[in-house]
Length: 289
Image (cartoon, rainbow, N blue to C red):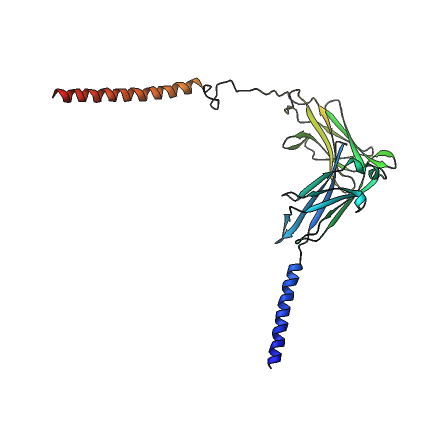
């Protein structure tokens, strides 16, 4: 009977310890995304995003070490390393050293690999894309024409049926040039948009920056190109530093405000002087009595 109790106790303890070990070894699933960006047909970079699912909701994962590769995961194809920020984002510019590998084919693959940690296993994500670029031009009556090309063999050919956005570059985001959110390229790879944002403030010369872009495309990634046009309203900065205002510095407040303040101060001193004279008279009367 005593041996049976010891056996049961041993089984219970072993099961408990095994459960603890399994819980400690279980790691969360890391979701790793990768995107390709080509800005103005000049700057190319990769952007990765890391997130996980906690209590049924997706949460960004900061502090994850990532390695970026071109074509394949090998030391010779390493583009660089980065660590995700507090928003779970990390990006890296494609260095000039990758030019030879980039020029091998009209199609290209990029990969990103996360380092293994106590919370997450190593994860690999990849994208396959076709090299493409956008050209933007203008015509009469403020018409904007953008053309999308893809590389086939060594020739750039127009692409049909791709959604493209045409907007004006602003500090807080891009503003569409018209009511249409996107345009679809025709058989010549072209789209045409009318500029309907008349009176929009530009720089000191009235210039605006037009931007045509393809966003989150499964074949081409994220492409954009820009063009400066004099279609904006000239905006000149006028300084109020040496003008009287409520928020002006000392000595530059409105005259009516200064007059009011000085009047109040003078009134207070007049009252104090009157009280002082009355007290003095009372003392003199008291001395005579």
